[in-house]
Image (cartoon, rainbow, N blue to C red):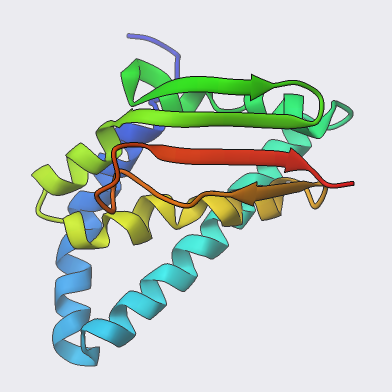
Length: 156
């Protein structure tokens, strides 16, 4: 047995098994819209906390470089296929050309919630990680695009 922690994709699959029936139950009680608002808020908070934990683990380094180095658990096992477009001290730009997170949420019947449970975390993660980095993304595979366009830039 390996001491290596599980990748984020495997973690999200485990979480989804619990989240799906909870969301369905809350939708019956609170309605779909209110349930999804609550889920989105909770997910964003968790992502900000994760970002802060990553920042503590990588303190003292250039924030762009440190963030790029911290992404391995999200890509482990081919969970994301990346095309790096630019990576230096000031920027980290890449496209995700395959997203097994999107595939997994669709497979589990959670395609509608996939963006909230996964993509929704990205901006909040970087907010928790560093206020020196801006994040832009105009499209995601989860929402039907051919690729996700991640653009991290060091603020001037």
